[in-house]
Length: 425
Image (cartoon, rainbow, N blue to C red; front, side, top):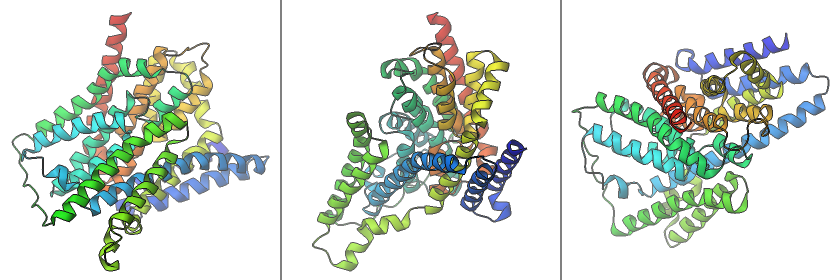
C-alpha cells in the first residue's frame, strides 16, 4: 500500500512538473511538495522515525553537495558574464552559419565536459550561446544539443559525470580503461544528434551580435575574469583528484578565490560603479528556483531509494532481463526519470566486484547508459536541469523536439559499444 502511495505521489509530482505551463505553477513548487510528501509518507509508515531522519540527513548531505556545486558554478559564470568576459570568445567566432556554429558548440561542449564535468560545461556553453544567438527558438535547439553533448562528453571521462566518478571511486572502473572503451560510443551519442540538428540548420544564418562599447580597462578586466573563471573551473576536478574531497569543496574554493580577485580588481572604484561587478550582485541574478527544483526532485528520488524501491527495481531487472546489456540499457533509460546517481548506487550495492570485477564490460556499459540516458528527458540529468533553468526550456517542448534525437544518439552509442565488444572478443 505504501509503495503504491509513494509511486503515485512521485508520478503526480512528475506530471505537475511536465505540465507547469498549463498549470501556471512553477516546477520548483511541484518538486518541493513532491519531495516533502514522499518523505512524510515514508516516515509516517516507518517503525523507526529516528532511522528515517538519519537517512534523510545522509541524503541531504549528498544533495547539498550537488546544489552548492551548482550554485558556485552558476555564480562564477554570472561573474564572467557581468564583466563581459564571454565577449572575448564570441568576438572570435566569425561564422554567421547556424550549422557551423552548432558544430563548433557541440565539439567544444563534448571535450570540455570531459575536462571540467557535464554540469559546469552545460552552464558555461549555454551562457555563451545566449550571447551569440538572438532568436528564442535557436537558443532552445542549441540548449538541447548542449545537454546531449555535455552528457556524452561526461560519460567517457572519470571526472565528467557524477555516476562515472562513483564507479571510478568504487573500484568498478579504471580511468584509462573507461576512456579507451567509451570514447567512440560517446562520440556516436553526440555526433548523430549533432548531424540531425545540423541538417535542420542548413543554409540558415544569424546576425552577429553588435560589439559592446567597452574601454580598454574593461576589456582587460573581462579577459582577466574569463581566464581566472575558466582556470578555476578546470582546477575543481584537479583539486578533487589531489585531495579526495567532494567536488563542491573545490568549487567553493574557486568561488572564494574569484571573490578575492574581483574585490581587489575594483577596490579603487566608486561604490555605485562596483555594484554590478560584485559577487553579491551575481548571486542575485542566479536562477534560485532551479536550485530549489533540483532539491525537490532529488529529495523525491532519495525517498524512493531509502524505501528500497530502486533496489527492488534493480532486482526485478536482473531476474527478468537476465542479460547485462539489457539491464544496462533499461537502467540508462530509467536514469532519465529517476536520476542516474541513486540508480548507479543501487547497482553498485547489488552487483559485487567478485561477480563483476573491475573494468568488467557491465560496469563500462553502465557508465555509458546511465551517463547518456538522462538526455532523453530534460530533468533526467544535472546538466539538463541547469540548462532548463538558464534558458527556461519547457519540459514538453524538449520532449517533443529533442528527446527522440537524444534517444537515437543513445541507441547509436550502445550499438558502437556492442560492435567494439564483438570485435575485441
